[in-house]
Image (spheres, rainbow, N blue to C red):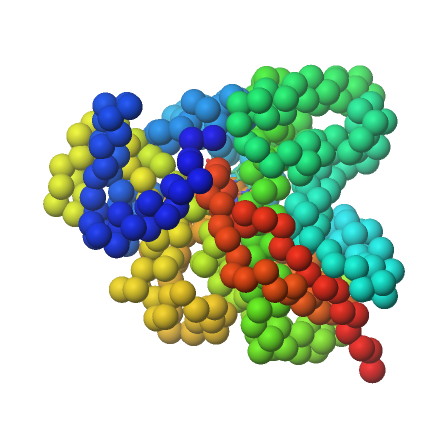
Length: 420
Ligand code: HEM
């Protein structure tokens, strides 16, 4: 929705010609969009002067998909939603999802054994898409997933992985599922049972300032938002993690060594996953090269000054994690996959505003803890037993839609790792 197939390439070319701040005129809209690609302006827009920015361009279309949930709302409504939703992603709560994540990973890999023996090639892009959908819907609906599946006959929200277009038709079809979620909420209210899942926590949440629960409409919008926001981003990151590991055997060997040194890959706590320093560096480096949210859009409320230029009120401003995370002024050999750069104790690229895969400031990704935890648990569990070999179809081609993803499914050969 919004982006065209060559949007990313056009952005990269424009930045290489025009530098770290420039504007492009959109004749269709009759307005300018400023592109910023330097740490000082990124920090100002996302953090120090964030009060002066709304989300801007493209939001109307995203609203058709997500309604007026935390991703698309502004002002006091957004603040109230953020107050209620942020606690759900505290590290102590996120690690309670460990068995759910393990189960989803194990159910997916159990059939890999037979596939490996038969030499079957798998499509890791599809595998990651299905896995991350599975994890996000289990986290949201818990044991009611069975009820939802019985109602629809398939895994609800399967369309998110089955259909790759993210156009208006997709948005309307996806929104039609809200009714089903509404029925589930009503069922839960009537039964008054306890549920440990994200929907249960949202139903129980009270705004600290007003003491009020989420209105029903909002509850449904937040549920739909978490499905979309939590699925494709994580799927895309894992897709690129496996691609990069398969094409960099030394990095894969180091990652395997770190994981093999663990006494067990079951029941990892949040802290355990953070201690897997190299594994997390691989994930961070994959998101540096291929940030799923490749472009962030904002709009000025009042005029602002960025890099000495006056940006009028009501102007769209775009910044791109993809561009800044590959900027030659801030990264050595930026096109190379080097997870070690995230192990340097003297450097924190986030504090320099040159590493923003989860954005930054008050509107940074609320699901970051869950995403990092889920991805690390997944990688540890899979890499303990498996090597994934790239079935070479040349370098990966990118598709920059709402999220950055691989244009085609990435093919992999499964090799079971020998056990001592
Ligand atoms: C690798 C995985 C992920 C990446 C790279 C990612 C990236 C991002 C980025 C860049 C934003 C800011 C968008 C903007 O400001 O325009 C964002 C916001 C958000 N993300 Fe994530 N995300 C990931 C996973 C998740 C997960 C697992 C969830 C929840 C289940 C989630 C929920 C959200 C929500 C609700 C927002 C809106 C927050 C707000 O506006 O206050 N994300 N994410």
